[in-house]
Image (cartoon, rainbow, N blue to C red; front, side):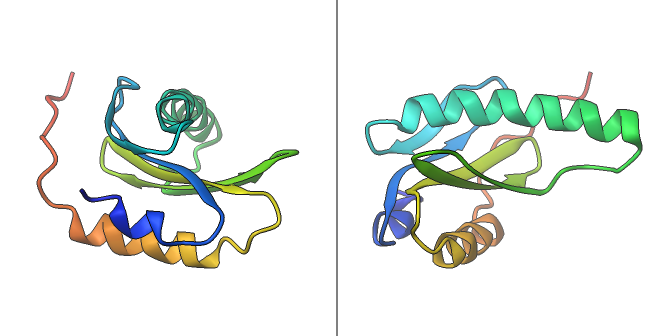
Amino acid sequence: MRLDLLRTIPGVVASTLVGPDGLPIEVTGEAGEALAAELASFRTGLERMGRRLGTGDVTRVAFTSERVEVVAVTLGDFTLGAALVRGHDTRAAQQALARLAVEIHDLPQLESA
């Protein structure tokens, strides 16, 4: 499983590799499915904002809520993300996501509209 590296990082409670349709390709943790759907939705909003502001593609995002910290990177049309218990250092997760993004080469190519 591609996400096994993320399972070893302290504080990670869920991780996902998700397509642009919000359907997960892989998940870990009880909240993995929800994380996949929400990251896909969040990415859509960020892409719209980027187009309107002329900022270009969003390639990395991180945010903190009351209970979790979420970090994510993009792989073309796909998003790879992890949720950690709030207060844990996210650097190891960010580094693992970046490493996985470089190593994953077998994702399907999506047709352009």
